[in-house]
Image (cartoon, rainbow, N blue to C red):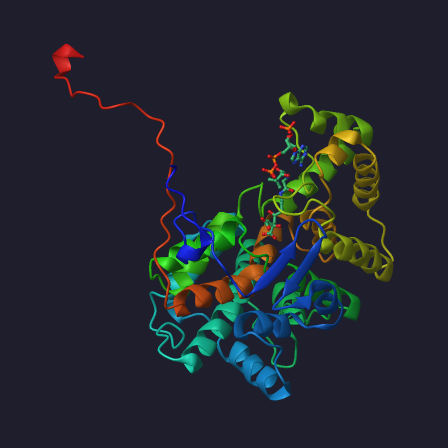
Length: 393
Ligand code: SDX
């Protein structure tokens, strides 16, 4: 009687849908991209190979990979007039606001990626969006620190190139260690897609109305920003820094997080789907330890994270509610070790998630049974109400 329709209505009004891109088993803690386990991809696949798997449906052979990488390099630059947009933002504008606005602005310029009429055009558009997202993020940071933009080097893989574009200066190229490049590559692979989460569902919703790839992904960036979603990686660092700087005992923080009236949550814990460990959290926890060890640095926040995790996992409140570390709990430790400023953490999440958003946009765009998504509601407002003239109200 609520008007909810079922899956067999194709893209039902409820917004539920069928998809062939990512599989999650929340009970078992399983995550696969196009059937490939996330653990294999995180250990052995480059971010761009993973992106091609998600977007085109299979891992590329050497020729396909080289062709796509050439497209990425050739489409890294923004239209010269987009510079005016950057200069219009305050240098301390939030990087997510800049990213969302700039991705949407791309389509205002007659760039080769905009007019998708065939598969070759879609490959150009996918490469262009992946490449320009990286350029916009790095240029935002350069604008903030008052340094000139560093353009990508054709000889570097995507993750390494991002670190180069962030931290190289005209008189010295930044050379990330293999461990740093591997940690960022793994971070991006683990964020590349996650089924029908808040931001991906937003992309699908906007795409279902027939909007183009850039507008749809720009909407996804905006939806990702909230602290309950992609913004959680920044919120986890705020939490760990607060515990550290104010000397709050971890157990006390856990007690506050259990008390709804405190307004405090254990950020980086819990998930709408996983009722077990988020498989990405396991991989990121190990990556955080390995990266810091390779850099011969210790981070007190990592020790606090581990203590908080151990206490929470042993606590009935979290166990009864099946609350476990999610993708955001350890990811910030890695980004902090790489020198990424905290207000860019969610931008890095967005860069990682862009292949998934592209794949979902294409799945909606190509579906002949596609209907505009139109969730229904249960009306609980006023019954029929008569209009009264102002002097009778
Ligand atoms: C991402 O959907 C995706 O796939 C998202 C994502 C992706 O890759 O796209 O995986 C990325 O967004 C991960 C989640 C990042 N967010 C956080 O870490 C924020 C902290 N987590 C929570 O706010 C919460 O767990 C959510 C938002 C993740 C899930 O919310 P739910 O499933 O709606 O849980 P709920 O709010 O209904 O809470 C159920 C109970 C409540 O207690 P009771 O009312 O039963 O007493 O669990 C409690 C909540 O108070 N609870 C928490 C908690 N999360 C839930 N209590 C303390 N700390 C928490 N983190």
